[in-house]
Figure 1 (cartoon, one colour):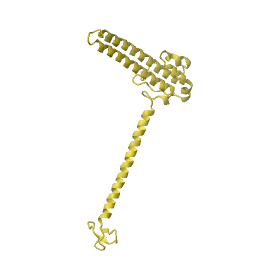
Figure 2 (cartoon, one colour):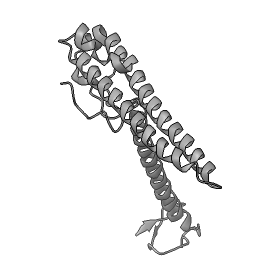
Figure 3 (cartoon, one colour):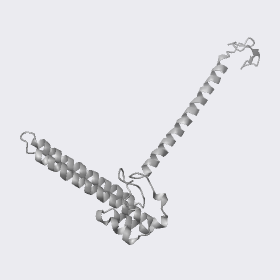
Figure 4 (cartoon, helix red, strand yellow):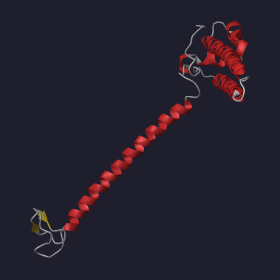
Length: 195
């Protein structure tokens, strides 16, 4: 049993008009359904906002993770990082990978960047050798009449791509070292030569 929303008389549940005052009763039912829909919509909006915030935070964490692979910064003593940051930066510059090993041999942070610098140096050397081999092969094929120019273009493009990849890896390492972070280089950063 329900009550009339106008005069309070008792009505049957399916009765649409009050037998006492004649007031329509569907509005009370309709407003209850509207309230339920509104509550559901508000719950959906809150859920959507929470999911969006979680996605945004995950995106921020990825963005803040900087360049490169795994972040090992928390594994190092902040005073070690602060004292030897410059040696980490120098280690990124090719043959200078050994500087942290000489200047701060007991520094774990310095040894980390010495390893990253050596791996980067070896990667650059491997890219140069690959560029020479592929460039030589494409150079020989460029002598073929009519299609030789295609091999010349391919040689230039290959050397350009290899050069860009090497330079990007260098920039990633340099940015991370300048920030005082210990983040592995993409693809090659997990290689450990110097422990």
